[in-house]
Amino acid sequence: MTVPGAIPDPAPDRPPGPTPRRVGDDPTGHALRPVTPISEPVPGPMPVLVPVPVAYRYCERVVRARARNFAYGIRLLAPSKRRALCALYAFARRIDDIGDAAGPVNTRLSALEEARAGLRAPGPDPADPVLVALRDTAARFPVPLEAFEELIDGCAADVAGACYQSYEDLVGYCREVAGSIGRLSLGVFGLASGVDGRDGAGGGTLRRAARFADSLGVALQLTNVLRDLREDRCAGRVYLPADDLRRFGCTLDLDGSGAFADPPERLARLIRYEAGRALGWYAEGMRLIPLLDRRSAACTAAMAGIYRRLLARIAADPGRALDGRVSLTPWAKAMVAARAIAGAGP
Figure 1 (cartoon, rainbow, N blue to C red):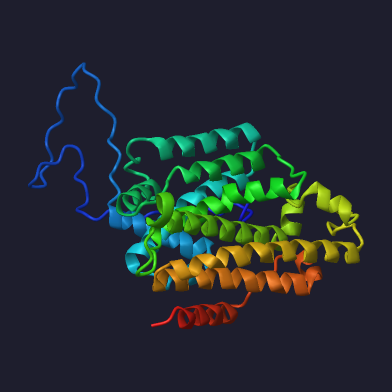
Figure 2: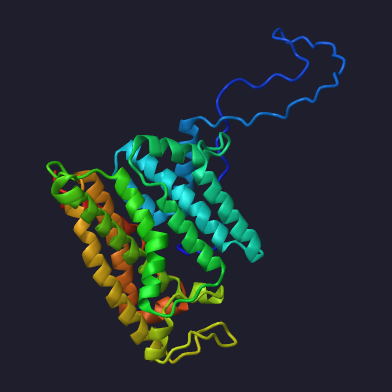
């Protein structure tokens, strides 16, 4: 998936309020004598309601700890939208971590279905900060929460060991796990002033924006596939299409030292070919930016710019991607974000 490996999420803040009194204390602090037990069953403890502000702070910590590239982009948004995107990310991160966790396949598939049930429930678990924040986000913004079910489907296919025969198969997977996030994010972003989402037959601009958001998600996920090629292969996952592997004479088999056994020049041609395809998805997805309001456009341009520069580094030196994960320095990311702000206009 997007970020291999499962790292525990940070613990939620303790809800504010006075320290609960012990059973047997009265309001003055004096101990009361124990009462005689009754035969009726005593109800179990009620779940503690996580206040909405605390739930959002929890999600923000998840983003800071787990999504450095994402965190750079959302800094450019208004606080309410930044919080909303943190809630979306935190739930997506939870699904991704289930898929990447160690353990039996059936256990992980069951956990994914539990996440789906939590998403479909009429109300959130009051003790779950991610679901509390997510439901509040859905009440404030027109986010299609059902798109998360596509992410769950894609993650379930990962867990079940899906392979991708054709490029179309891989793109379908990318639409599920990343295009869905693009469409969810679009519900938080606002359209530019003067852009009417209801124009044309049945809302042409909004439909185009959703298509571009989906394409940008595909571009980002294809970049992740190339960035994590070795890491995924060591975990037993192969995302590149079997058709393309045959075309370039590659197997992605590992030798005794854990390195790719294919000739480096073949692997380099394969990676550059896939990178070129990903650039086409960026070209389509970046058409979303002029349709967004200024700050949403800057946020999107920053995130897309960071990943597109990462893709360029991979294509320029495929050997680095084959040896390990390629990344950008904080300075390079900051420069991309600064250019995104300047390009968004006043």
